[in-house]
Length: 155
Image 1 (cartoon, rainbow, N blue to C red):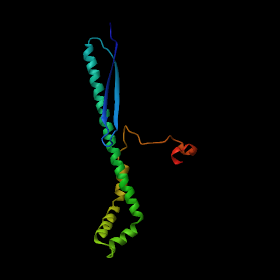
Image 2: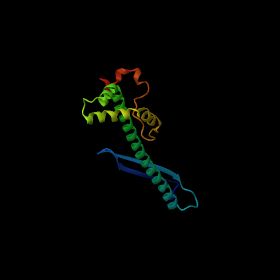
Image 3: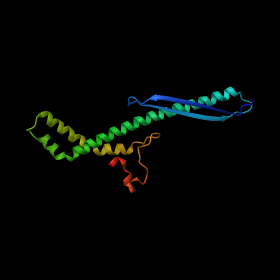
Image 4: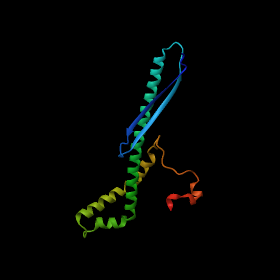
């Protein structure tokens, strides 16, 4: 019997680093043709090593994307909190300057006002952050706004 082609598969299953009861499973399949003059087992082992390396690389990229998504969500949450605070900036400034409020409340208000100064820098940092490479942002298909009658989430 003459072997002409060989196919190898490498897979990984790993837990989600931030969620309970969630895991990932992916596999990579490589196919190659057997070359004359090189032992078949050596060719199979080489192909298997390449599949294992690609599967491990894919796993590392998924984990890096999850870290990036978590960092982007945290930064966006900080920005939203500061934007909400910005809406009540005058009241917060009055609390920080008032002698009628307790010291702890005055100190908190002063700290919040200091944080507001960093809002433009946080926005710039979020804009400069890279997008995840393997895990896409959730998206509804293009043109969805043109037919809102199918918007099941806005019932």
